[in-house]
Amino acid sequence: MRKIWVGVLLAGLLTGTAQASSGDGAVVRTEAGAVRGTVTSEHRTFQGIPFAAPPVGELRFRSPRPVTPWTDVRDATEPGSRCAQSAGAGTPSTTEDCLYLNVTTPRGTKTSSAKKPVMVWLHGGGNSYGTAADFDAHRLAVGADVVVVTTNYRLGAFGFLGYPGLAGSGTFGIEDQQAALRWVRRNATRFGGDPGNVTIFGESGGAFDVCAQVTSPLSAGLFHRAIAQSGSCSMTWPVHGVIHGSPAGSPWISLRDSQARGVDVATKLGCADVECLRRVPAEALTPHEANANPTAITYGGPALPLHPRQALAQGRFNRVPVLWGNTRDEGRLTAAFGPRPFTEETYRALLTEQFGADAGRIAAEYPSSAHGTPGLAWSAVLTDRVWACGQLADDRLLARRTATYGYEFADRGAPTGFFPFPQDVPGGAFHSSELAYLFDVAGFQAVFTPEQQRLADQMIRAWGRFAATGDPGWARFDGRNVQSLAPGAVRPVDLSEEHHCSFWN
Image (cartoon, rainbow, N blue to C red; front, side):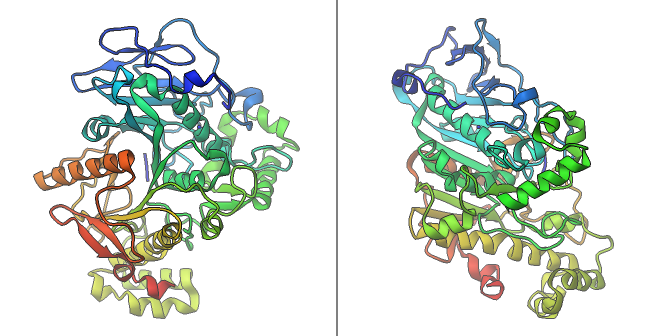
């Protein structure tokens, strides 16, 4: 859980010839100017490419604006700044000049003779923290033979503040992502990518954003496939559901409630209008996003007219093939940061706090004796109630109208990296554990066994095949079964039965 310029150009720029000013492909000329990246024997990486004007000063709380072109070759060997955010689970920042993206390509994609599928990554962090630069995509780019774009977008209050009369209320971060997708449409060919074959994919908060883009009329035609990893349109959570100590909530908030929340923020900062909020120092705004982690995305405006689950139910979404999935043990990461020691009394008290009169029935369905420890029983409740069954609900709605594929990452021996899992709640296939199988994640040291490395290679090929064809290589979702991804055991599994979804429904 740690650590997109709307413009009209000549049609020739949309599918133009890739241009490079150096023989090794280190220099590529984008629409706004040339960039010089880093070239290795297997891949090329271009970092810190601006896709929108810095959203600072009078551009704070406004839709993204065009980049100012440059004349010299721009250095693209270092990432742009992370967007303003509190510490969260990562590094704090007060920098608002952060609308930059990174492009990683397999070596040998300097011409348009064999255009590659493009995959655009929306990082996680609950729309409150994180940055694109934390995800080194070279293994995915080379192994899947795709062009990978990782993008920043405004976070917390800077990206999702609502306020009465403010155009774009609560969806500036979503609009940033759309600006990045328009940049991809105009520039992909220059990096060897196919602007007519773009896949968006994201994890956790980034998966909520994928759902938002799938259900946003403003993103129609900007992408052709979608992958959501651990985050659904149907998701809600009770108290302590995603972060221990957090209130009950949802990834979504109505325009009315979003604007009321914005007025409350403004009042606390001594502001009576948006112009005043635009003058508030960034460091005064970042604590407010921390208190709303995860930061909710506003629906009821142009970017998201409907609650995304309602949009799926009514068929009012962008009809693209989707790959929707979870990890087998999502809730273990939340439980790992719960009370210690985690006793049977703690478990029963949390059930009562969350579910009231239903606590006894849930304890009978999830007895500690069946799971090994009270902490693992609590983890299973969170996994099923908060994550898996919401994902299943999305799968069933999507499958009515578009090609839908499900998966469950199920390596219960996955590397835990920097996460301090207690003895009574081992990591298992915890929330975000699949990321190291696709990316080199900053600060996360993943050492794989040979079988885990084979699984990582299989997943990279499946994600790449889906990006290329809209089919990851297994059967479409049939109402219950998804593909379980575990070392030496890639097979269908009944998601509803495994996660007690009939009970929760």
